[in-house]
Length: 266
Image (cartoon, rainbow, N blue to C red):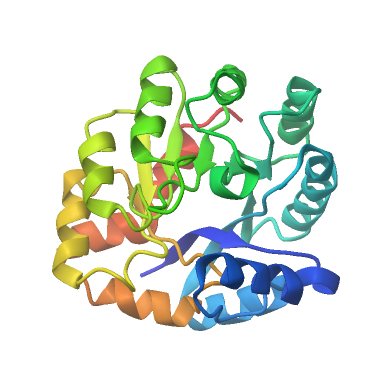
């Protein structure tokens, strides 16, 4: 069975270790890998992963264009192995122009991390960003959930997606890192929500994870590793341990995301 990893952070080699360590410091969890593309591709191949959705986040507005340049170049250099998502910051002055550049550069969506970037998912600026993305047919991949911060609360994401029902959003970490039970109650009934499995299976029992997955009917769930936080080989093993049917497993491993990509504007 093929696997698609729908959540992987990558960084230029010169800053990869430092950037990876900053994630570990933020979450107080030791990071498993070094954040380099070469490592991701090697470990992904060992895990049976045929493609990765890669992204990075612009912590401040001024960093966004350079990060998008890197992601465009990298995704274009590995078209068979990588799907690229760009980044935005809702406080950018030239957001619509950057969205146009993201589309023209071949990136298929946008990743944000409200807790890193310090904005609320239901703020006026975030809603304007979500509307602009929806107009261009680009989905939003958002870190969702952190019991320590208010920015990425699943309830805020739910309010945003009800306000912009034409938008499509992938809510990372089974909808809400560290607040998994609240997350599905807020998000699972929204038709424009998808979730990924990353940075969740280490903390939930296999039975808990499978139950949450089924709240999304299994059809709106993608496999993800959250590289470099976790080793793709270990994340594949955690996923394989879930008590799922073979059809559920294959859909989450790759078919759901393939269908999702097919439904996006080209």
